Structures are given as structure tokens and as C-alpha cells.
Length: 363
Image (cartoon, rainbow, N blue to C red; front, side, top):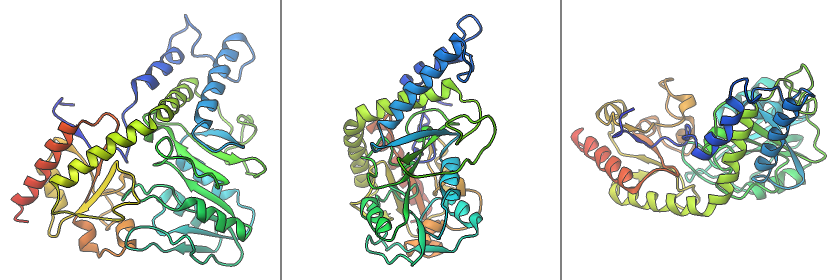
């Protein structure tokens, strides 16, 4: 990749933190150090690998509420599927802007579903009416496309009032915001907080019963069979510990970047709430914008039109239409994602280039 390339797609994935890479290296070494040992084996190298896994589990747990356990998974998609399929009864309610991993998992259960609407700001009304007989309410902490921060604590209270469990997709919020204290189940993934791809976690509140999604040798307390990777666990743990340490500094840094971007792109309209949002996510629209042409003209900048998981479908963003945008307005939108290692110079250069390219389209 050219040194001049500017990466502004941190909602899709984040770069691996140097600290996470360093934590992984001992478990990627060759036979001389035994770092490759199976953490489920009883010999000394296996026990050493198992100890590294447990250190990582504690580091990840420190980002989440007390009174629960961390189950390592391959990522948030698996965690969400396991959580949704474990609901013993009742309807499933979820917000209209949930990630497709949650929505499709809910549809696959065959349960009756209730889609909770969002307003133009992209927020669920915390007093929204929940259908009688609901067994699970699922609302993400921070939306991956428009960055809005949902009132998850109050929604969790509402779920409990009707005897339902509350599931929070905290992929975009873990390590960045305080955890959703009222949740019963929380899904997170390492690669959205500067850790490695291929590992995530499901946090389960004490007393909440879940079922295995993957069966086999009975690892992870019988809830997620398969050999764990000490390297991935160690990288996840180190990234989580660093995120906890840097949470306030990262927030302040991203707030400054967002303010700079808004000052340059002042003629663009923000999609979603101007205030109840994560500052690392800026979703903007400009009437008449041709996004494919913009992306081509700004080929040294990595940004997107929305979720990486929904790219290439040709359909307008489900999230943007849910907040009231018509298909044309949705297609006139871009998402800029800032991160810990993004510089002010990069944001200024990228935003001026994007706006100039839009002006070249005659808008």
C-alpha cells in the first residue's frame, strides 16, 4: 500500500495495534519455543498456552460488565448467532438498524419478530412498546453505519420489565464506551478494537443459560467446541487492555478529527443524530452525489458508502432508509471512519479531496 494512502474505514475494520501484534508473536513461533502448543493439552507447553488464553479472557472481560463470563468465538457474527439461538421462548424484538448478522440469525429461528422503529436521528425510542410474549430484545450499542449511540441501558430495563433477555451488539462500542450494564448478552469482536481478525466473544451474564452453537470436544465450558488459538486470544486481550487504558484519550482524539472533518465538509448533511453519536463515525450526504465516481476519483482514500457486509448488493442502505432517507438520498451518502492512528493531516487532506471531487461532479 502506498504511504500516501489514507485509511478512513474504521467501522469495517481497524489496523492491528503494535501491542496486540507483540502479544501474539510468542504464540506464532516455531518448535524451539513450543508456542504452538494446544491450550487444551495437559503437558507443560499446553498449560502455558492455556494460561495465556485465561489472561486474555480476563483482559477482555475488563471491558464488559461484572458478573458474567466471556466465551471466545470466531467473531461477533458467531456470538450473535449463539445468543439468538439460545432464547428458549417468545418473540424476538430488534431495532430496524441492527446488523444483518443479528437480523438474519433472528429470522432463521422461525420466531415471531418485531422490528423496533428508529426516528430520523437513528435512535430507538427507549419507551417503545414491546410486544407481549417477547423473549429477547436486541439493540446495538453503536450503529456501524451512522454511529448513533442507542439508549441501551433503558431498553434493557424495559426488556426485563416484560421478562425478556436483552442482547447488545457492542461491536462498535466495546473498548470505546462504558459497557451496557443492563445487558444479559453482549457480542464483541477483536478486529473492531485494533485486535486480530478471526476472534470475538460472547459475554453471558451469570445465571443466563445458553446453548452450544458448535459441538465437538467440549471446549469453552462445553459452549463452543474447537481448539482455541492462543495467538488470537493474546492479541484480543492486549488490544482490549490497550483500549481500556486509552478510552478517554481515543475519544478526545476522535472528537477533534470529527470536528475538523465537519468544518471542511460543512455543506454536507449529517445522517443520524448530531450529538448521540460516536465521533469516529461520520455519515454524510450531498444531493446529486455519484458515489462510485467519487470513490474512483479519490482512489488513494479508503472510505465507504456504508456497511462492508452490505457492499456490492446495489440496494440502498437499509439503515439509511430506516431513518427516513429515500433511496436516492441513501445513495448520495458516504461514511468516514476515523481511528486511533488517524492524523489531523490525513483527515484534512482526505476531506478536501473528497469535497473537491464532489465539486468536480458539479455539486
